[in-house]
Amino acid sequence: MLIKGQVVEGCKIDEETRCAHYHKEIDRIAIKFYCCDTYFPCYECHAAKGCGHPAVWPKEEFNAKAILCGACGHELTIEEYLDCKSECPICTAAFNPGCNLHRHLYFQI
Image 1 (cartoon, helix red, strand yellow):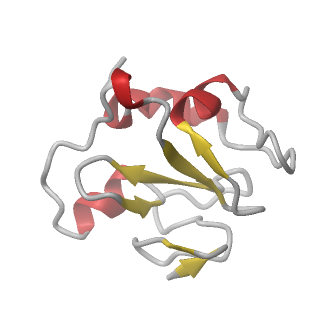
Image 2 (cartoon, rainbow, N blue to C red):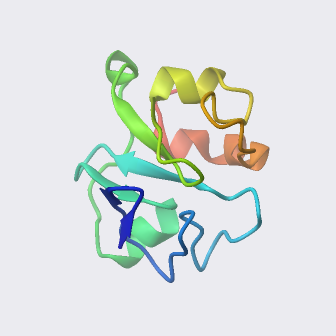
């Protein structure tokens, strides 16, 4: 699905990147997976597409743009995302702070 000019893959995605697995109002980011250079709303969508490669971004790549704000389409670097206090630095849309529980699935900690 094309969202804010970016291709986002996953299960039942809406216009702000919410998916079948995470669909609260504040679930509005997609993450570009390191292994396949493709945006997905979550790790479950990634797995559902049959992507079984290691997906974790190494720390030395945290300057890469890999987070898509589903509200405005701004691409954040991983560093920006980890420091943004669950809010888009451009449009101030709230991101789900609960995503912190899954950081280890996306980023080397």
